[in-house]
Amino acid sequence: MPLILRRRIWWDPVADASSYVVYASADRTIFESSNFRWGATPGIISKAVTGKSDLIIPDEWPEFPKEPGIYYIGVTAKDETGNESDPFLSQGLFKFIPPSPPSKAGIESL
Image 1 (tube, rainbow, N blue to C red):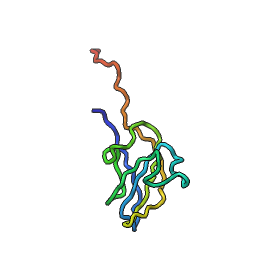
Image 2: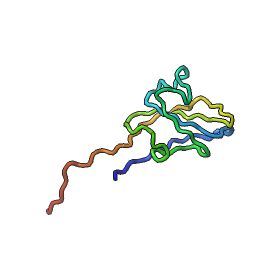
Image 3: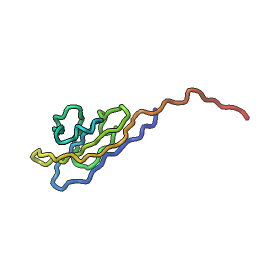
Image 4: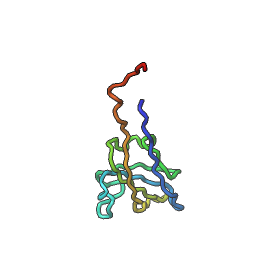
């Protein structure tokens, strides 16, 4: 089994938030105010988070894209009535695929 390093997405807690939603996309323009439609935005995936202000991937979000690349992460706060903030946007390089092992190796006596 290869070693795949996990990534932690975190944010500062919001006093009046009852939960959060983490959104991910390879397309930054999806998060522009004219395009972003919270849970109804095409080309974006999301994960609801309750009771904490971080998310470990891929462990806690196995649906997170496996394709290596830069992903834009938006985090919103939701209140108990379902109102949801604008997203706080960050970006990072994500890669959950290890390199291939060496094609040849050996042990020699010297």
